[in-house]
Every structure is written in structure tokens, then in C-alpha cells.
Image 1 (cartoon, one colour):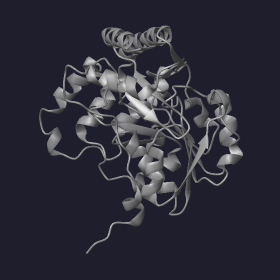
Image 2 (image 1 turned 180 degrees about the vertical axis):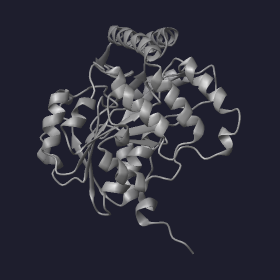
Image 3 (image 1 turned 60 degrees about the vertical axis):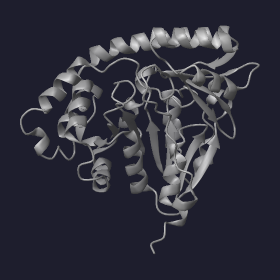
Image 4 (image 1 turned 30 degrees about the horizontal axis):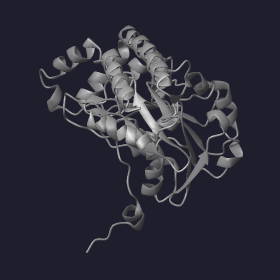
Amino acid sequence: MSRIRPNIEAMAGYVPGEQINDPSVVKLNTNENPYPPSPRVFEAIRAALTGDRLRKYPEPLGDTFRKAAGEVLGIDPDGILIGNGSDDVLTILTRTFVPEAGTIAALTPSYLLYRSLAQIQGAKFAEIPWGEDWQLPEAKAFAKADIVFLPNPNSPSGTSVRIEKLSAFAAKLPGLFVLDEAYAEFAEADGVPLLKSVPNLVITRTMSKYYALAGIRFGFAMTTPERARDLNKVKDSYNCDALSLTAATAAIRDQPYYAELRSKIVASRGRLKIGLSELGFRVIPSQANFVWCRHAEKPSKPIYDALKARKILIRYMNYPTDEGLRITVGTGEEIGKLLSELRRIV
């Protein structure tokens, strides 16, 4: 009888945000973009469905996407690794750089998947608490880590560490520094300029949030061409299908469309923060497409439950060091309905 590996048997596994297939539900729990992707995406997918595109294997390294992304981001396309969502990229990084019984370190609270990646790899997981006001602790706390994962902006808080602090932090790390920038396009700055000066840096991105392609599953990493070549040895031969590559390429080429969406989301984020504050919530200033909050007087879980009963989904998150509500920035109509129901609840 085959036996499951003890570390897999012992782990709980990562639990994604709830997905409910009901169009009447206001879905503000998984940080999806509330607006549709660029019309160019639909045009490109329709074109890909004609002829023999689907009969043939896709580009194994995603060269067309890498060229487009390199032009948009001003980086060497040979330093780009493609993935089936950024979670796939994080898995490839873990498999490449973390030996069994090695160490992954991450700040807490942050993305819960990092722990699962360590458990799957049979590695130790070191959780380091954020400093005061969501600032970085001393780098010496990460001295034994093979990889340090740092989401910036952070989830669930939406806070962001300044780029110059990240550079100084990375210089003190002995292992790989992975800057997880799933929400960077909504922030005031990103870490791409650091690629030229920080040798142990890898930046990961997703097309799920800013580019409104969560249903497509596409992510990528940016690093040196030499490191990308090693990472390509570990990834599946064809880890991204023809449609996801087509959609991602069309999306990243249409920067004016997404800049307009960004303006709407940032404006709605401000409206959401003000509305929650007026209802007695303590809201942390966010650089992402969501906010993290707690009510000053009422516990978070009953608020989450009451909203769910009203067909409004948000995310209740309970960490050992913190708990609260993470609310995705939706459309103006969705935010209005959320605030109206919260007014009745609190």
C-alpha cells in the first residue's frame, strides 16, 4: 500500500477564498478586478480559437509574452519566467532554491500560501512579525532563510514598504529575496528598478488583479537571465496554455485601458475607506485594491456572517497575531450596497 508523505498528511493545506457561482452575490472577498479585461483580450482569444492554434503546443517559455512584458516594464525578456498564476511561480522558486529541511521565511500576517509551500517542500517555515506600523523588522531575523517571501503591497493589510528600504533589507539577506508584487500596479511605486542593483532579487507578478484575468491563470517572475534559465529547468514543459498566453500578452500591451481602470479603483478605494471610517471601522491606509479593517466596538466574524447572509462576500481572516476583515474594492454600485448593509449591521 502506498503511503502519503508525513509532511503532506500533517498539513492543513491552503484554503482559497470562497467562490460562489451566483450572479446575485456581491463578491468582494478575493481581490478580483471589478471591471472586465481589455477588449483587446477578447479579440485576441477569438483569433486564437480559429485555425490550428489549439492543435499545437503553446510556446514553452512564452516568448511572445516575454517580449511584450519586457518592452512594457523596461527589462530583459530573457529574465522573465512564466507561470500558471503567480502561485505556480512561487512553487517553482521554492522547488528550485529550498532544499529539504531548508527554511522559508515570511512576515506575518501575510499570504497564507507561503506556509503551505514550506510544508510541501518539507522545509522549516519561519514567521517573523511585522514591525510597528507594518514596517520591516531587522534583516537578522531572516539570517537562516533560503528564501524570504515579502508581499508588497502586503495582504491582508494593503500596506507597502518604501523601495529604498527594500534595497537595504535585501542587501543583508544571505538567500533569495522574493518580492511578491501581486498588487504593485495599484501602489505608488514598485520594485522593478531594483532588479538592476539587487542581485538576490526576484519579483513576482500576477495577471489576476490589475489585469482582470483571474479566470485565465497567468503570472510571471522577473529576475536575471541566468536565474531564469535555472528556473525554467524546474517548471513544467508547457505550464501555460495557448489561451492564457494570448490573453496575458494582449492585456499587458493595452496599458492605457488599464490605467483608466486603475484610476477608478483608486478613487473607489478612497470612498470605501471614508465610508468604513464613518461607520466606526479602523481602516489601514491601503496601496492595493482592497482594505483591511476592524470595527472599533464589534467583533469581525459576526459582521462577516451578517454580510454573507445578505449575499455580500468579504474575507474574514484570523491570524495568531491579528484578525479582521479584508474587503475588495468593487464597483461604485457594489461599494454603495456594502456600506448600506453595514450601516444596518453595525
